[in-house]
Length: 310
Image 1 (cartoon, helix red, strand yellow):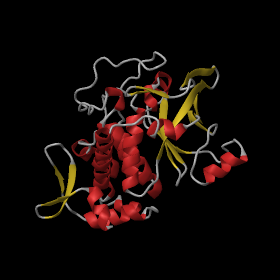
Image 2 (image 1 turned 45 degrees about the vertical axis):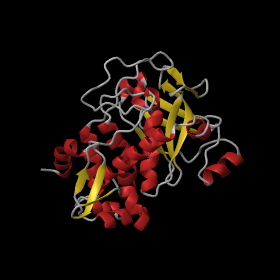
Image 3 (image 1 turned 90 degrees about the horizontal axis):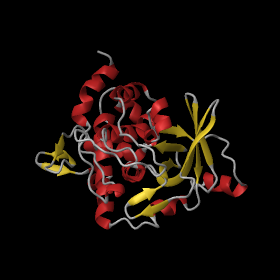
Image 4 (image 1 turned 120 degrees about the vertical axis):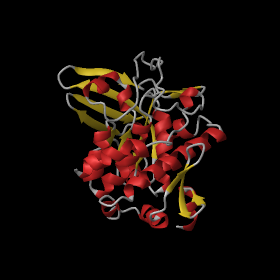
């Protein structure tokens, strides 16, 4: 049995209990994957956003062969998608905030960012523009598109890009890639980028078979997501809880023989400290399906609690 096949056999039993709140549905926790949304509402442009999900074989292949930094940064969005299979796909803010909390726990800075997305075809030209009218909140529903920016590695993560019909028909996979070396904009924009900040007008173009996905950072990109809309404290806490569960599920994979050796070569000291603190402690899930590690018999510790001693 290959490493990828062995990983795939275990996947469905491990990727549970990682759900996060969704502002779109007024903070209610998403239904389990087995209870998919039956009648998805239309997106802002009148499109059917479809459903979230990712082929498990893709996760298995990544775990088996990815280099260290990719293995760490790509696994959380893939696990989030796997767990969320069947949920309505226009959940970009939920994805970004849950993932931002997860990355923070392992020492990776992550910034939710509002963008405009233009989808073009190689021969037919521009197909659709999303988020071009600016981003705004309508109660708990976000009108626009949100991605996640990782300043440390320059990666740009769009976990819900499959919500757009053109992308879904071409290649229904998330965007996890590095920003191109030439980002355009003014000298001030380039200076901000060097400091880990994105300014309006910065682009990233991603090829997808016959398509090109052209992302542009919009004015007030971070404030729109995390500041202008005051997410209730209980909802924010549930986003953090979703991030804790997500990182716990990822740690289960990162500490496995054949995988942990590559993780230890990745430049993430906080993650290394967590792996050392957890060791081979078994996982415990409570009645709410929250994840804990049984560091000593009868003692169940959450990942965020371990950080106080790392």
